[in-house]
Image 1 (cartoon, rainbow, N blue to C red):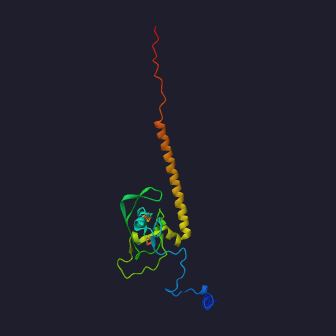
Image 2 (cartoon, protein in one colour; image 1 turned 60 degrees about the vertical axis):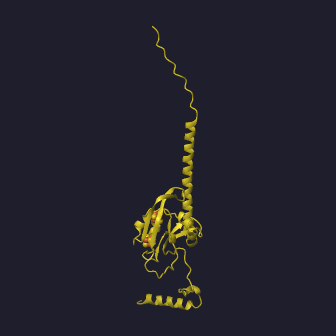
Image 3 (cartoon, rainbow, N blue to C red; image 1 turned 30 degrees about the vertical axis):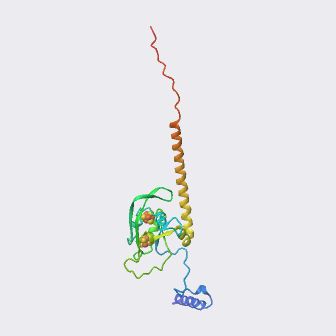
Length: 217
Ligand code: SF4
Ligand code: SF4
């Protein structure tokens, strides 16, 4: 029937409108900012850099705990090119204790970021994730939304608070990698110790060669 779809749509709207007076679930608008809609787990707004440590860690501890190794993959893949990274000239241990380069500078221009999450998808080190914070407006139009690594650093605790399922999976994967790496290092150390012990052991005494005398005619 002509217009059937339109009538169904109007009926649904009327049902929700009338229902919203008796059921809070049908009320799809909230009186922001006095009221807030609950933030669902898969919400994503802008990226942050994960550091291993507590929420209230000192600035030095936050930077020391950053998982980022400044590989610059996210910088290359970011479609609007709003990530800027400068590599360090020295190294610090990563989560498995391996010395790694770290970002001496890591900036994201949030005013340009389009929340596509590509940086998160391409990061091999679980070092960058999407936050759920959206109230970022500022009156500083030129520098207010250019975030440096200190502003971007958020703890793994924070990651667990906003994306608990995903963060638990990441932790399990990193713990598995760390265990494998520790087992490999232990096996290498044991092999080296065995080799050293073998080299230090006294050599068996070889009897002097008996001179073969020429048979006399
Ligand atoms: S979310 Fe997308 S646009 Fe934003 S920094 Fe990451 S890759 Fe770039
Ligand atoms: S956030 Fe990830 S992809 Fe980007 S530079 Fe750091 S380690 Fe590399």
